[in-house]
Every structure is written in C-alpha cells, then in structure tokens.
Length: 415
Ligand SMILES: [Zn+2]
Image (cartoon, rainbow, N blue to C red; front, top):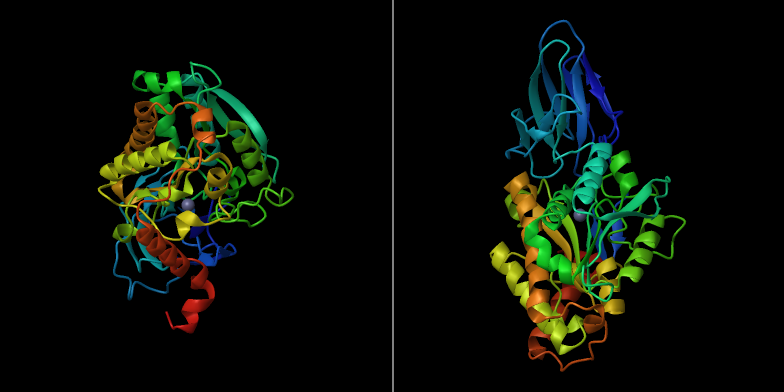
C-alpha cells in the first residue's frame, strides 16, 4: 500500500490517486502569466514523496500526466532523498519523460521505505533560509527584513557595505522569484565568495546586497513560480499593487534605496535539457545612458560571454517593460543581467561556480573601468548614439516579433 507524501513545506504536486502500486498524478497548475504580449507557463515541476506502508517490498509505477511509458523517450533529470533531512541527490530510478510534462517512473520501495522525488534540486525552504543566514553571518553581512510577504513572512536582504564608504556603487543580486528553480545556488556561492579573501578588493570599493529568496511564500507553498496571490511577479513586477504583491512593493522600495549600478537576477533551467544553455539575458547597450556606462556594459557582456561560450538570450524577454530590471535601468541607469540562467543539467557545483564567477567578473569590470561610485553611473550624460543603427533596428524588429506580436499576430499567421 503506497502513500503519497505531499504535506511538507515546499511540496509541489497536483491532485493524485493511489491504486495498489499504481500512482496517477497531475502537475500543480498555477495560473499562466501573460505579460508583455507573451505567455509564461511554469507548470512543469514537482516535489513529492512516496511511502510503502505495506509489509512487503513493492515496485511503484508512477504516471505524472501519463498513463504509461509509451511515447516517453527522454531521460529526465531527477533528484531524490530518503528523508527531508537528507540532501537531495541525482536519483537512480527508472524514469522516462516527453521533454515536457509527462513522466513515467518505476521505483522499488522496501517495506516501510519512503522516497522523496523532484524534477529539480529541492531544498526544504526553512533549511535554505537558515543556510543563507549562516553564509551571511560568515561574511559579516547585515541582515535586514525589508518587508513582509503576503502571508507575513520576512523578506530578507543581506547587506555588505563597501569599506570605502556609502558613496560606493552597489551590486544588487536577487534570486528565488521562481521557487522550483535552484537559482539560490548562485546566491549562496556569491555569499561564500564575499566571505573569502578573493573578494576583498571588490568589497573595498563596492557594496553588495543580496535578496536570495524574494518569493518566500512561493517556496513554502510549493508554487510553480507565483506568490501566494497567484502572481508571477518576475514578469508582473507591479510594486503599485502592494495588496496583492507586497513582495514586489518591498523589493522596489529596497532597490530605490540601493540605486544599484549593477543588477543580477538568477534563475535556472531545470527540465529543459540541452534545448537551453546557461547564460545571461542581454539588452542592447543603448538602453544605458552615457558612453562610459555603455562601454562598461559592453565590457561586462564580453566577459560573461567568454564564460558561457557565447550563450545568451536576446530579443524581447530581456526588454520586457514590466520587469524589475527594466525599471532599474530606466530609473538608475543600472546595468542588468536579468534574468541570468544557470542550468541544473550541468550539476550543482557547476551552477555554484557559474554564479560566483560571473558576479566576480562583472564586479572586476567595474573596478578595471574605475566606475565604482553610485554617482558615476547615475550622472552619466546621454552619450552618442549607437554606432550601428541598422543592428539596433534589427534588434527592435526581432524584439517586437518575439514579444508583443507573439500574443495576437503569430496565431493569425499560423505560427
Ligand atoms: Zn525563473
């Protein structure tokens, strides 16, 4: 007799039915977000447990959005743990999926045995929050509750002030908009770096602020990417709607105090496999004011692309007006890499290393350019126009095609 374990903090699975050793499950379906003319569907992730409550071993057959293994040709990346106190590790279970939502799993469970399974790297939210607090303390950071979530949880930021004083520019880093994505690996690695001697020059001349779990309710409720009111506030970053998205209102208030010169927002590809590559979303440099800042942005871009082997995302998504990064650049001339995607398929250690390296590289670009004061970035005058207007025109056309036209034009054209 199998029992579905889905009542722990962070559990993420839709309705299910257990029949002997056969388990039929649906994925949790959160509302699909429409913003900037595009659809953003995050309903692909699961974390749940199974327990064999019978007196004998059994082979559990689990169909998630699937009635059998037929037509499921790919091997998914799954993580598992015997208890929630244990670290989740790559799972050795027979599994197939279709590259999307349909999974078929077969696993042997001894009498009394439990197994927790996820198609992403799962950390119980309370443990993750405690780890972040430890890392911050080790780096001498000041913790601040910059607001409260819709369900009343603390929104926590960690401040690492610049040794040279409050005039120095701020590097702002967020993660955790979409709880199933293990992008907090990057924040944790950056916090480790900040606590190390390798970061000492950066910490002299730059301040850092990390908000690693900007959507804590989502982590505890096990949403696919929303807050408690069903808002995916990466795409719908509307601080004026504080009654539904207090997380966005508080984050924007924090950002306005920081006036960051550089902003990273980490995300992670999970189930997407080889179809996606880790890298930054990039926007054209003419979004930035002043030749010095444009040159800095170009230099950072070059350093990041060296690291990713050229992988990046251009087009409409990096330009989406309803996102925090767009607001930051318009208001404070902030150079943004948002989103910056890790890829879970590369492994946990590679994700950590990636996050640490790219933040260190971008910070080093600021030191090398000697643009390390908030005033340098904010006061940048409008510089000359981009050198290549044709390329800009092509960029805008592509952006329009990828973005606003997606919602209504493409269906008409049968695309
Ligand atoms: Zn994301």
